[in-house]
Image (cartoon, rainbow, N blue to C red):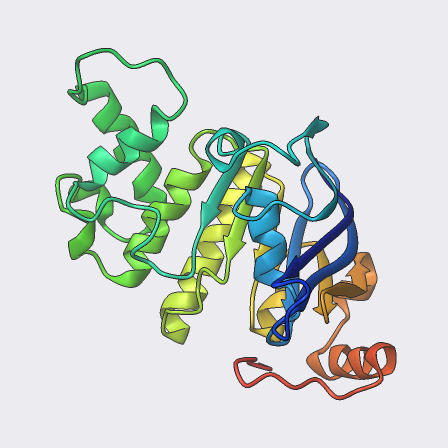
Length: 264
C-alpha cells in the first residue's frame, strides 16, 4: 500500500545549517498494516510523513501509494489517496462550521459538486450513526460549531473525516500529543476502532513509547533520518519499553535522548 524507495531529503544544502532530515529511507507497508513510528527529536518522523503527503518533495528516491507513483504529484492531488490527522486539534476542521457541515465536506471531497449545498435528512442520519459509537454524545450535537468542542472531541471528528473516504493510507501525526492522558487514551482507542472497522492501512507517529508498543502490528524506530529498528509480529507483542530502549542503544551506539518522549 505504501513504498518508500531510497528517500533522501536535505534542508538548507550547502550552508552551515544543512540538515539531512531523511537519509536513504526505504519502507514498505502492506495492505492493512498499522505501523507506529517512534524516535527522538530530529529523527525524521514528521519529515517522512510530510514527504508522503507531498508537503516536501524528496531530493532523491520514489514514493508509491497503492502502486501509483506520487513522488512528483502535488499535495492537493495526493490528498485523494490520503487521510491525515495532525497534532493540533484545531487543524483538519473548519472551526466556524457545524459538525454536520464538516462531515459533509469530508464525505463530498473529490466528488463533483453542483450549486446546492444543503445537507439532506438522510445524510444527517448517516452522520449520527457514525458519531454514536464514539460515545461522546456528538450525534445529538450535529449543529454545534466544531470550534466549541474540546480537543478530544475535535480529534474524534477529525478522525472520522479523515477516514470517511476510505483513504489508501491514514497518517496520524502525533495526533494525541496535545491532549491530556485520559483524553489521549480515548482518542487512541477510537483510532484503533476506526482503523480496524474500515480495514485501513495506517502510519502513526508518536512520542510515547508505550503507545508505540501497544498499538498497531508493527513498530519502526527512526534515528538521524533513518530507520534503525523494524519490529513486528510476536516480537512486538512481547516488547517492553526497557527492551526497546536497549535495542535502540545497541543499534545506534548511544542512549535514547528526547525531552519530549514519554516512556510509559
